[in-house]
Image (cartoon, rainbow over all chains, first blue to last red; front, side, top):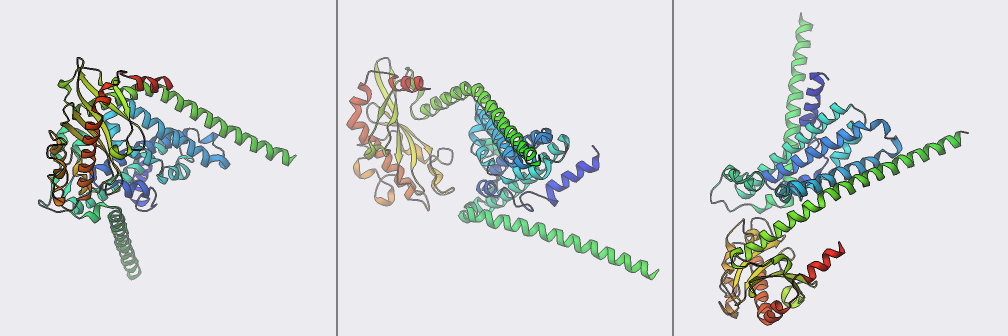
Length: 230
Length: 222
């Protein structure tokens, strides 16, 4: 596999085809769990692992998946993977399960997973598909964490609160109180805050893309002008 | 001929799908069979740990998980379903009981509490097991958010007495939160009712000499 093709998958996952900002898939868990940065990180990591695993399995058996029954087969495979993750986590990583456990069933409601199965994993090699799962998951995680940071900052005036619950005692020191004696803005923590935050992020991404496009167009037209003159 | 061919295709698809479902179900059964004992053990540990937060572990020496009785009092315990009471004893002396109590009048639905009460009717500890209160306002009832819940420890039905078992805004002894009165009011009311229930039923709670009867029954069902 060439470096440029994996770089392309990386770019697709993080920016061009970001599942949360461009495809607008997986909004249900995204909006429900992004009230703090740490919650966002938890759901993001759980989603990323699931996406890698389902992409890998679906890509591996893609030759036996018949077109007319592919959707029910994706559903069965994704449901099995999520159930297995939940059971095994509860059995062997119970502490982690108590924190991430509520996120795992939420992953089933994430359309991004069946979306990637349909759009990518069922047509590409195992390595490419796993990589696609990794980067698509990473892009989703990044949006979750950024949205979490924004909502937490506005809502509580801090960043990374509750880090010790997920990462262990030492992480308690990670919590940064940005605005001391801040009363908090409940709006940001409740669901409407999630919609507003996501809208701001999407607008920001579109703005960056537009500025970039305008700049390349400008360079192109200058080049054309120079060529015409010479 | 063509018709037979397409019919054949449908059957193949059907069988592939059935096989996938079968393999998936089989795998899940296997994973479940492997995980179940670990999960049961983990949950037992968690239960002991949460019981020990409301009843000090050094105060009793019995197998508290198997010394249970069921109670059902929708008026005082807030739940229409029967709930388990865990009983702590030292030797044959009754020490304390842990009751599951539901405050039905939380701001966003019921709040489930675990209340530890010693044999003299004094509270040994209260913890919130489950709630849906507003984050940042009502969730101060959680131990990991604030120490508010510790205010109950050492209190009893006569201390502070009927009039004192309210939040301060209602003229009682317990703090409310800034911007959230309904949640603490619900919790204070539920704990008070648990104390009343305990004083009315103390003899029956500790008298039932069939330790583990209920738990054994539910285990044989599994």
